[in-house]
Length: 289
Image 1 (cartoon, helix red, strand yellow):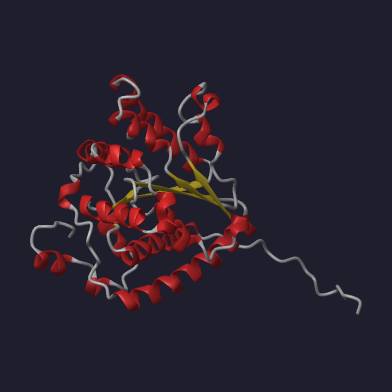
Image 2 (cartoon, one colour):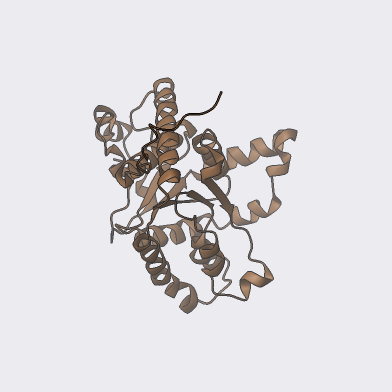
C-alpha cells in the first residue's frame, strides 16, 4: 500500500479504483497493537488520485463538514478532538487553514501547544491538555499536543525514560476517558520526507515573506531526524486505539494530505451522526410587520 520500494507496486495497491468507497482511508489508519515502521510508508503517496479532480472533491467534502459541524453545534451532546502532529515544516498550519478555514469559527477551537509555561510545569503533563479539550458541540484542533511529552521530551532527554515511558498508558487512559464522556478523538501524523523538509525550510529562508516562519532552532531539531522518527513510531504503535485512532498521512503532496484529512473527518462526523434538536410547534406564531 504505502511501501516505497517499487512505484508500480504502490500504484497497483493504491485506492485508485476504490475512490468512491467509504473507507478507503482505512489503508492509512494504524490498527490497534500494530507495530509500524515509517520507512515502509511513502510520504509521496497520492492514493492514485488526480490532483485537479481531487481538489474539487475536497472542497465538496469540506462543505459537508461545515454542515455536520453546524449540526454538532446545535446538538451539543458530542465533541470532536482532532490532533495534528508532524516534524517541523510538516504542514500542520496549512492543514488547519485549508481544511478548517471554510468552517464556521464559532464551533471550532484551535489550540497550539508550545513550550510549557512555569505554571503548566507545576502540574502533571496532561493538565494543560485537558483544559483545552473542546466542550460538547465543538470541534477542537490541537496543533501539537500531549504527544510532545513522548516525542520532544524523549528525543531531547527532558525527562528520564521511566517518566516518559509511563506516559503512553496515561495518554491511552486519558483518550478513553474523553470518548466515554462524548468526545471523539482522531489523530493525524503528517508524514513528510527529510528531503521535503529541507526544501520547505529553504523556501522559508529564500522568501522574505516567509522568513518569520524560519527558526534556527528547527535546524538543530533536524539533526535528530532519526530519533524523532523512532519516537513517532512508538507513539503511533502504542497509542492508536479503537477509541482514538492514528492516521499516517503522506504529506509531501499537500493536496492529497488535505483530501485524506478532510475525508477522515467527514466520515468521523457522519458516524457521530449529530442531529439538530427537534423543532417545537411554531405554527401559531406570527411576527408583526
